[in-house]
Amino acid sequence: MAANKTVLTVLVSVGLLAATACTSSPDGGGATPRTERLTTTTTPGNAEVDRVTWALPYGEPTTLDPAKVGDYSPQTVEANLCETLTRMNPDFSLSPGLAQKVTWTDDHTLVLDLRSDVKFWDGSPMTPQDVIHSLERQRDPKTQALYGNFLAAVTSIQATGPHQVTLLTKTYDQTLPKALSTSFGAVSQKAYTEKAGPSYGTAQGGLMCTGPFTLGSWKSGNNITLERNPSYWDAKLQPKAREVVFQFITNSNTLTSALLSGEVDGTYELAPSSATALAKTDSGTIHLGPSTQNVLLIPAHSDSPAADRRLLDALSQAIDRDALIRHVFGGDATPLKSLVPPLTWRGDAAAAQFDAAYEALPAVTKPDLEGAKKLAEQAGPVSRPLVAAIPAGDQRGLQALTFIQAAAKKIGVDIEIKQLQPTEMSSLFYDPSVRKGLDLILTFGYVAMPDPASYVAEMVTPGGIFNWTNYDNPDVTRLLGQARTSTDPAASAKAYAEAQALFTPTVPVVYLAATHERMFMNKRISGAPTSFAYMGMPWAAYLGGTGK
Image (cartoon, rainbow, N blue to C red; front, side):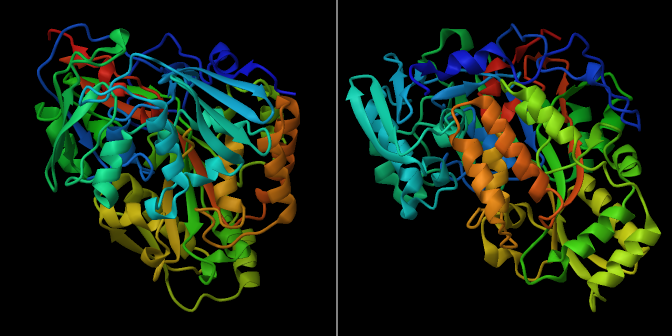
């Protein structure tokens, strides 16, 4: 039984990632990654600052609707606008958010005790009805939401008090409270959302949320400006920056110049080439943080010859991952053995069990051209070049795919690189029509919460939003279901480990690397978290001036 288990008490007691004392900058060139170089936070910025300009290297968001954001740019912005019911911390632990307490009172009842002092940007109080509407619209087909699967076990969502919402479920679901820390758990005002309709979250429709910043303006093709929310409820997180301006800069060289000149104050997802240039100056600091990002090469659809696991295994054996990490990622990554990096479960009560199962997986493939050629022969000749997609202007992606292209050439497989505009690249993850004409996608993906099973399920179970090749293994589906519904962390970890052992060698994916977060800030500001947790927390509220 899970009776009276206050979820946040469990999750806060162990952070997913531990901060370290070292804050040294990377040299940008080929060093072996060392965990002591990773940090989760920076020195607090204590002074007020009129404006901070931040880059979005993946381009302009397609939407800021919390129900629909699922990529780097939109989540980087939206996390500062629409707050979640539980809050992600820089060390990947969870703490209370708009819900001050989240409790399983029994295996079928999840109670959310809401804060009573939260107001939307227009001054109206947040009510249980707003929370219910925000959750319910996730499973309304008209919303076209990305996260409706998190409600798979939920049978009803009801107001059970003036500041309380209760979710009744068919079964215990250990994923559900964790998901409340993602954009799935963000709360929008019901009245505003209903009035805006399909335009909610767009430049025209706007937003109405409770976060530390309001959406000041959105100039399509130019920038998005956030303004400080003067009536924000959390006194400990009152923003010091009056305004945060997001610039859409997808070209690495352009971004490097803007950071060097001070035109842009900072960025997440700094390219290794930019890091090399910036490390030679004293204009600011490059910070490395822990991350749940994974670099994968994925077939675009089941009809492509690239969907043949034998061909993918041939490509995998042809790739020198150590060289890839050294030359493309500046040494700031580690080889990846499966879909999910180990940091994902670091704060789980059964972390040692997860670690042991991951360690037991076959070793990372070493380059073996002769073996790769034999596998390619077994798969059969590929009569045309395989078309592989990356975002236009993404130098890191281009370098990685060029590296893979050269390795594939050695075993007789031709790869044609196609650079897509950032909005098109973002859309292809959720729109099958955009993937037509493509064979491979080089993805820089990520796990948004401390729960490997839910992420993997979207890639390997029938109907999963990222299961582009229709992979279907009933045993994997069953085991992932057990991992999600078990009330015992050890039993959940065991089920996931068994599923991992089955899908890792069979799902059509080439596992490449788990990267570290690389962030840059210039000297005049500080305070931003350095870990990948920034994607799910109001990170800009931590920014402040340094007086330099």
